[in-house]
Each structure stands twice: as C-alpha cells, then as structure tokens.
Image (spheres, rainbow, N blue to C red):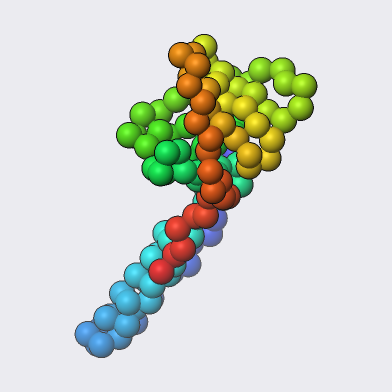
Amino acid sequence: MLAAMPSAPFVPIGPVSPRAALALVALAAAVVSGCADKPSKEEQEAARNTFACQLRGERLVLRFDSGEARLLMPGGERVILYQLPAASGVRFSNGTLELRGKGTDLQLLGNDGTTAPLVDCQPYALPKSS
C-alpha cells in the first residue's frame, strides 16, 4: 500500500514570460524526443538474433528465436520454421520450406527439390537515431 505523501503548499510564481514558456516547451520536447529515438532493450535483443540476407538478389530478413527461425520473405510473406536436430550447424523446417547451414552459410530448400543459397548474410543493424 502506498504511504500518504505530505503535499507541499502551492506557491504561485507569478506570470511567466512567453520566452521562458517557449524555452520550457522546447526543453521538454527535446527530452521526450531523445527518449523516443532510442531502441528499447527488446528491440536491441531481437536485433542480436536477426540477419539480413540476399535471396536471388532480394532482401530476406531472418530471426532466430526459441527453437524457431522467423523469415520475412522478399515479397513480405512471413514464414515460421521450427528447429530440427542436425548433425552440425542449424536445421529448421515447416514441412514446406527448410533452412540449413552453418554460421552465415545458409540455404533454403523447397519440398519440390529447389535449393537457394542465402548470400551476404549480415547481422541486422537497428536504424540509427537522429
């Protein structure tokens, strides 16, 4: 339960000049905008497990999280693959699409027998705040 806080008496400070009021508003806006641009801890953690790769010349974003690989395909489709045992490296599948490889040397395999390498995989960088 919260303890009652003694309240300080309100003491009017008199009229505030427009220039002082504008300075206070500008200061408050700067403080608020400075906090809004900083990535949250959740965003920073997600970026650590996220990679941007090229799939046939188009950007694919890949995020590893709790036994899953989440893909944002070049066309905007979201795909979730589930981790499978692998002798070495990683292996994820959803029955239609499979991701396998080691480190950033990854490839996608379709259930129709097609194979496509993921190239230029780089850790995802959060947008820089202005």
